[in-house]
Length: 392
Ligand code: CMC
Image (cartoon, rainbow, N blue to C red; front, side, top):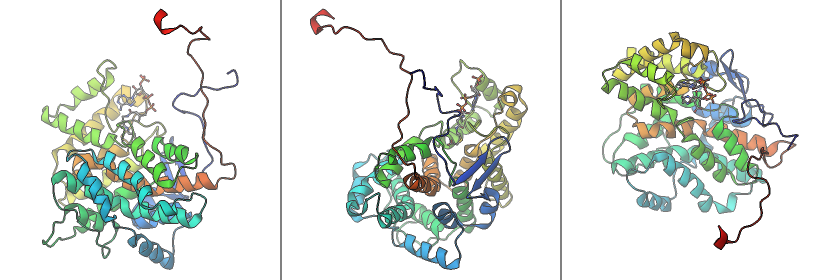
């Protein structure tokens, strides 16, 4: 084992070369295919960003029209898939539903799963992008006992998702343009983030030649943890707890610094960003915009602002370079859109879908592609003599 370098948590180990996303943690820079996320968030819709991540270039009019039409072909779920929903408990976590149903897509489309066939891969990619909002909205409808709403292909991606979440049969549903625009922004800033835990998982699983649905399902599972995508849910729960506890942010900052308290400030800190998280800046600004337009009237936003202010001047956080991350303010917007807390990480997963797929494809197309197989430093016992059961 002398030649093995141990890097627990892969702090400084590059697992791959990648041309998808550039991230500079010291300067707070994030670019997809060379384009700063600030410019994409201001000028694009999420579907264009999906195209960019998958194809490496921004689409022209013709290309994006074809891409949107392609997506529209795949928004519906096979009727038999509803039976899965009948079997889930009403309070099943929607991330578990999302991961399970995505894996189950491979049982419905078993004839187009060849990882070496570009048209199969293309179809799987489109199915994932188009069906993720439907799968997610059905999970929500299941949890509240309402009828599942079919996708409406006359609407755009975000409007359609909101429609499937919040409309009910036989009642006219008014699209809230401000809500759809806010959702669009959130999906864009979540769309990729190079070799994070879930993306590395997708590449790892795919490296064994597992199909795209299996790989993405594993990525959703990785994202569900509270140290990763689950932090947005954990963050809002924390802000809510602080509010119920009288809004004393200092008390919680103190607790976060106490290593014996077993409490961290959710939505704070990042493995790579050491000056600020550019995504958090964009989302915080969007929160203010929504507040000014009367779309946010939520005491937890005020608590979040105060918590950030206290933490950012506290030496503990300053020394460790702990700043608000993407998950700190996203929950405030989701709440303003009426999205329940259990669905927050699901929204993250819908946003991250194009990034996962782009990485899976890049991994497959890499000239040096081989199965991911990290090594270890063994710390168990040296060879021992076998002891028969009656002598143990
Ligand atoms: N609150 C209090 N202390 C913290 C926090 C926090 N949120 N984050 C890190 N620290 C401390 C940590 O205790 C350690 O202190 P010391 O050096 O005294 O032992 C130091 O800062 C470094 O932390 P680490 O755990 O070694 O850092 P990491 O790079 O392994 O972990 C992290 C990064 C994001 C998991 C961590 O900062 C964390 O747990 N944050 C809260 C959860 C969260 O917001 N996650 C979302 C991440 S961004 C989006 C995503 O990936 O999905």
